Image 1 (tube, helix red, strand yellow):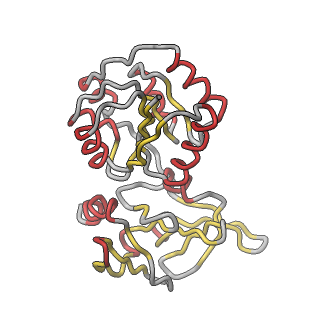
Image 2 (cartoon, rainbow, N blue to C red):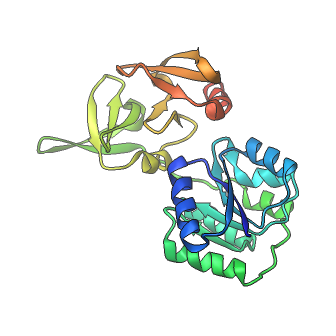
Length: 251
């Protein structure tokens, strides 16, 4: 029986991946889902190496390549990513394969066929990983277009307090409390704004530092966030994201 470990911080993506794998390999045994570098290292140090690993490159607490700093991974790896630049890095590591999210069933089948063909897992080079992770200058959006009736207006990035999703529609809220629809998903918006100034609080919110009015401890080692011009009293940050959020808030 093939033992497969999934390391992926998006629950919906992980569930879909499990479903697709089971359709191709119904008899496989799937472990996880692990969503952080910390939990992945702990699992790999406490369990026999799986036969195959599906590894999301961007995890809740950092870039998953850091796992190799703490544990020797001998299993073949299929990298998963929503970002092309990371896919290229993973490919240069001579991984079994890489998959761009959302994962295409045919591409997944092709990757699993390559794995089953017996291709040997490559040796992971930490020096090569460090080289690949050299900072790359990325240009983030300075303004967003919004529509007000028949008029199109620009909203500067420093005027935006937060983005949020409601009923499958994305909105931006300005520091002045004005709400506008934006034509992007929160996943797309997360890649467009500078992570030094904006943080993905949870599935529904991306906030600027300046829009955070209060941070409160909550049950289960979580945090509750209060945003300006926001009536949602249940904005929670998960235990897994808490340390990265505190690091971001205090930088």
